[in-house]
Length: 297
Picture 1 (cartoon, rainbow, N blue to C red):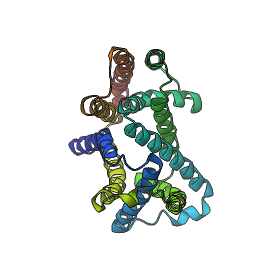
Picture 2 (picture 1 turned 90 degrees about the horizontal axis):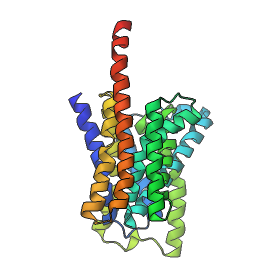
Picture 3 (picture 1 turned 30 degrees about the vertical axis):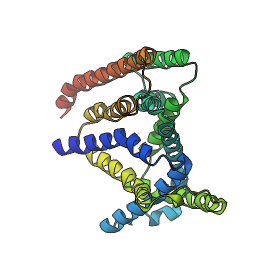
Picture 4 (picture 1 turned 60 degrees about the vertical axis):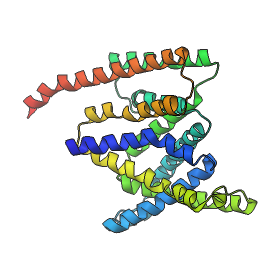
């Protein structure tokens, strides 16, 4: 239990502090950074798979084109999510991107209701209504639709939906997604190179190494998250997921000095209230069902 909490906390903390890293490498355009991130992730994952001699999952894929297509779709969603996220960091919109990961759990619940025909409890409906009112408030007072947060929330929610029904584990799944995206990334970098527009080529060796580090930085928190998720209850994991956007919001406001006035605070407070209601309702439901589970045993 303690080890699982540690792994999960480290994973969420790394995700929450990612804006600092992407701010340091902000001279690399978002799309090019995604290409490097995919390719260096693949290199790192292949090394991990080679160390663990974990190759048995590849051969059955030859007769499973639908599995490959599913991971191609999830890889595309992940690449879109990463692109919007990195663009937001590079354009001083870290606070806006944190909004996406705050509302992501509620988007998951809504997708489960709409697509998986899962029943929603009154507390969940109330939480979603509060979150919608927060998004509406932010839209009204900022004069623009919060597309960054909603794009991040929706792409990550649908990515999670595809991975939830996938037949491969976290490491193998990320490897397959990277393999599918790698040819596209290589073609993009080759085309940019022919145009003389490769930003990494003009960096110092130290900065080039820092760009390559994006591979381990992508894979390591995913592996720690998977290790933590196996060791702790989902109710605990659900509460811990707010570590990431909370740190992200703190980095945006305190470190990067992004504006966070009263109007924006009211919108976020509505969303935080929705998340509190959602978390308390889920915890109460889990506690209420414990005696029944004990009787069944």
